[in-house]
Amino acid sequence: MILFESERDGRTNIYLMVADGSSQVRLSNSTPDTAVDSAPTWSAAAQQIAFQSNRDGNDEIYVMNLDGSGPARLTDNSAADTDPAWSPDGTRIAFVSERDGNPEVYVMRANGSNMTRLTEAAGADTDPTWSPDGARIAFVSERDGNPEIYVMGADGASPTRRTSAEGADLDPVWAPNGMWLAFVRGEATSAELYLMSSDGAGELRLTSNTAADTQPAWAPNSTQLAFVSERDANAEIYLTLADGTAQTRLTHNDAADTRPVWAPAGARLTFTSERDGNPEVYVMAADGDDQARLTNAAGRDTPVAWLP
Image 1 (cartoon, rainbow, N blue to C red):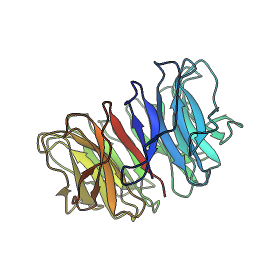
Image 2 (cartoon, helix red, strand yellow):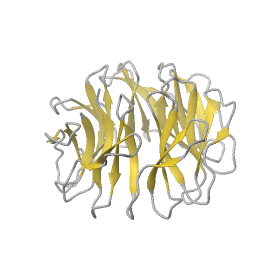
Image 3 (spheres, helix red, strand yellow):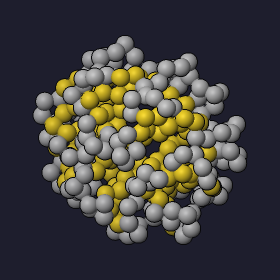
């Protein structure tokens, strides 16, 4: 099963489909017409989907069952609550809240109880992502004046700066084995992919060219990363080994191909392509073969996650 966002009904909602593109089902049904349901994240342990929605006037965190039933609002305040991220065991959800006047990382139980602020800094703290063992959370912080990668305990203890660069360090992604963090360094037009151990040691630059390399996505076996590169004049999907070697272009067309997402077994990838004039969900083998269009709708379709 593939979880995806779609604007086919005039506003952003959350959908689910079988891996071959069949049985596309709308899971969320927000009102009013201006409402947006987005950023869905699946918990296999909790058997629920967390997402953000402004259906009640501002962005809040919600959960629903896999079939879209039982939607429940978990946060309730006048500031934006966004970017939900499930803990690996499905018992907690990290998220970003501006309720105290500044974007900070919070955590709560899966039912919305025991809401706790984990970060407290003058600069924005965003993009929380759990380590595979659930013991740590990586995040982006501007507390020192520049976006850098930090890691803290799951309870907020010992936040430690892991990167130190003149440019922005963004989009931390844990390797499934928990040993490495991939991230993006630089501005939008000149960003590159980097890798470091989870303690910040052994920083390695994976890409080096004059165009942007972004959106790193680890293969389930932690040996490869898919990513998006504009080195050939438009956004395409590439593959690299974890040491930066054997970089291979997987997609070849004149339109943008972005948002690579691995299937659980590592044999396939979904991605968004505009090759047919509209952003749609496509699938391909991990070597770039057998590319096929899964969605065909008037609005944008974007893959988010494969469900085991």
